[in-house]
Structure formats: C-alpha cells, structure tokens
Length: 84
Image (spheres, one colour):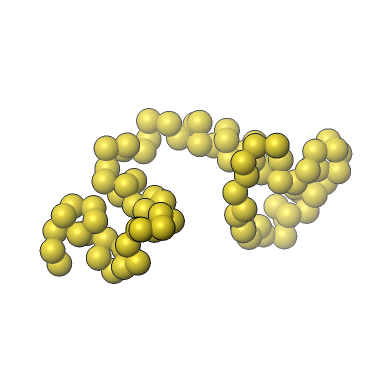
C-alpha cells in the first residue's frame, strides 16, 4: 500500500451509518471510501486554490527537524518576511 498518513476526522451519526453501510455493501473499507472521496473532492477544487499564495509555504514547515517552533505566533515573518 502507498505511504499513508493517519488523519482523525469526526462524522455526524447519519454520515457514519451511511459510510458503514456503504463499506459493508461494497466490501471496501471505510478508510478507502474516505480516501476516494477526498481525492475526488480535491480534484474538483483544482483551480480554486491560489497556488501562489504564500500561506501554502507553511504546510509542512514545522514538520522539518530544523523548522521553526514559533510559526503559529510569527507566521507573518515566515510568510512575508515582516517583523511584527
């Protein structure tokens, strides 16, 4: 299987029951249905997210071993080089 990342989500009761029924009926795991739905949704959103926006540079920034530990406080500094 591909390199999967763990995510935690919350579903309302109706969505949870529907997902369980779908997984049972199709013999495909709930997780696989969620992955497929996310992939389809993201594909539909292409072109709606401004890729040039510096905010996207923050994604994964703090996961780096030498990444900043104060990015949530001083995000403008990391995005725009501004001293706030």
